[in-house]
Length: 542
Image (cartoon, rainbow, N blue to C red):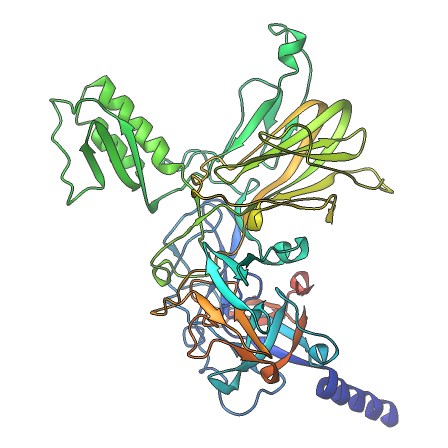
């Protein structure tokens, strides 16, 4: 028995010393892919659960592990976190969610393959652990985006190397994507500042439920067969609950005589050049206040239009992990991913998803009978790509993913790309930012669409603190690294010397192996929290 335990102990020492080490993440520079110390927040409006980062000081723990060489179990730093008292839901946009009373969850614990980069070159988009170039006593975890000898540029949130846009494969997109909307988690419609993001046509065969959409084809008595076979689209609009700095205007030929003109200093509403203007999303209470000031029906119509349009805007790079005050500016997103499960119950027909980046329109047609996906581009005759997915052993829904990330159209069925992605050029004129970026339709097939979600890509902000540099030169054996939580990450954008030398690489993290959650116990007249394993969060790192 003693000999067996001794052999096991030696094996563990050898494994940890020469193959893998454990590291604890203390900060949120890689959130939401990898989490530091955080609090699990259940949105009181939509019920979506998300992580809100906290500093170690706020969580009741001492400072960062910054002294001595990196040791097994060392904490990985690389960002700063702000106040913990408030959070914003990344799904529905509810802000000022109080989190101070919530227990703290420890950061993700990683297993790091120490020898991974001794057998092969580090690859673009993979996560790496390395020594902090400014303080080798610290270990950081980031994503490699630039390789030795390259000139790296950050343009409109994307990474360019040698003047070429670097596009992400499906696995990387899935590892980096950030939720924008989950149809199964949405606020009550009684909320005055919320309206549904998915707009379902009153006619055409669609029925919306809490967690799915059902399509039942068939001729209506008041329609011809040709009319009944027309596509009925379910349209996504990005309804912004509150805030924002975007500008919206509607036509109003004349300001009403019975209403006082708005004061531009004290209100975001203004009137000039025959148009009514508003900055941000107009609250319902302010809409009603202006409606009460005049009896003019044309003014009422303009105010109601302004309210609706001010809430329908482009997708911003909101992180529920960050405190809103940590991020002074939100950037608009056009790199999105649509995901849904499709289950056919009968009939012969098709399902379509259409996405736009503001200029181009792309349509994926799912032909269930042929098990075929076809990609169409507006203005181009016929499909530009066609692919089939293999038969499945058991019946059931298929998982569809379509993305416009990195100006590349990628379509996958059940996690496998069905045809070569289509890359396209941006064009000389920046496109209009899409406010209705996704829609789907069906025809001739009895269908259930569930698990409908919209995700966004990481937008790499052009600066970090006071550093405005966006072009970086790498020498041989140097790598450029960025954190997924771009607004607050301390990484190659902000260091005096942005590169990470090959000699500073520690290894490749491959597993979140000991995630935890707070367990609660009532003892001594108060709640007491303790750490319990969270097996559902064990995962491989993409």
